[in-house]
Amino acid sequence: MMRHRMAAVQQLSDAFPLGSRLDERGRLQIGGCDALELAAEFGTPAFVVAEDDLRARARAFVQAFAERTGDFDVLFASKAFPCTAVYRVLAQEGIGCDVAGGGELATALRGGFAPERILLHGNAKTEAELAYALDARIGLIVVDGLDELDRLQRVAGPSVRQAVLIRVAPGVSPDTHPAISTGGPNTKFGLNLADAQVAIDRLRADERFDLQGLHFHIGSQILELAPFRRALEVVVDALGDFGTYDLGGGLGATYAGERPPSIEAYVEGKVRMVEEVCGPGRRILDEPGRALVANSTVTLYTVQSVKRNVDTWVAVDGGMSDNLRPMLYDARYEVQVANRFGGGTRCHVTGKHCESGDVIVRDADLADPRAGDVLVTPATGAYGYAMANQYNGALRPPVVMVADGDARVVVRRDTVEDLFARDVDG
Image (cartoon, rainbow, N blue to C red; front, side):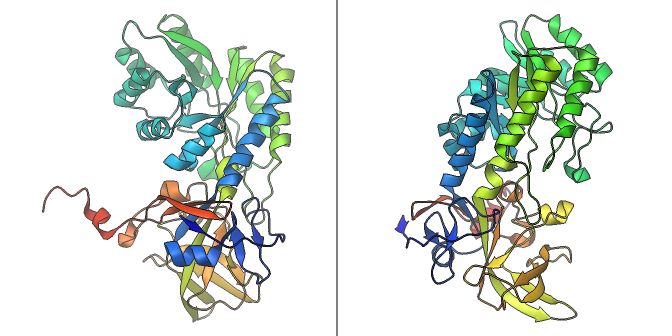
């Protein structure tokens, strides 16, 4: 653990973690730590997580719901950042956890979430995953299909008593990228309304299961609230009223050029719509993922080269091995030189991988970029670590957590040995 210089307070864009600032030299400070010192100590690329930001957003969600309803639970959609240390921080803040498979369930348990505070969903859960969830006595299993219901009923022993929800595809698509829209009429997620009614009847006839309510999730990086209400109205009109509604998550994070509703406005809208559509007294579950973790984290890179062809290409030592989102669905990021914020050079910030599409930020505006500079991209806490990979033999970055001027590694960087750690022949 290393003590880093504290910094004077100045204003940055909202994409950066809460409490970030530029010091009197114009150097980025995150969690009281100097970005250039972090890069020198831990190397690049590196995910740097501001612990106070994680805690503040978790508290804001819990407080916003507590001020508006007495029966709710906030569940971290942990596919966004399935890191044991992140699980541990959010569990300490009193929220529950949503996992999308057996591996995330194991990590959530290791990270300190009580089994009864865990919800398992996913569109193709295996018998092994369902049996694991039943054995762990988790709080809720979300039934995603009739074939899955067959498997669940097959693996459940006679003494099982398991609370379940049914995931419904309401046929509502929000204004987001098709790759992260999940509630439309032609989706792999959830049951159509007719099949949902079949599942309801089967579960109500099986005393091993307590059908508590309905689940729907319409997408991610949603910047307006009207689609949530349309989805709820469709579900209630078709399937009737239940005691519990899991409204999914989907609240957007602040990226370059995108400004989501506040946590308070988002929660107010969801609580009000349930009360207006269903009446008072319903239990509300919500599953924030990127809204909890995206803006907690920045990625640090080192510039390897600057090439001036038709355009200017600034190549760094990471790329699609640590941030696939720009390649998957054209996600936009802000980028800055960590000790020279501002613009002046229009360029493309590109990764090191053997793909022309390995571009982290197109049409960036950097201040005189040059080899050796440390670049910073904010808002990389959601799906950066989660999707990190070893393409071209990349060594996956460390996760460094910072708070009050202290920095500690919570996930080490890959070593070359990790590239063949699973080999069993030779």
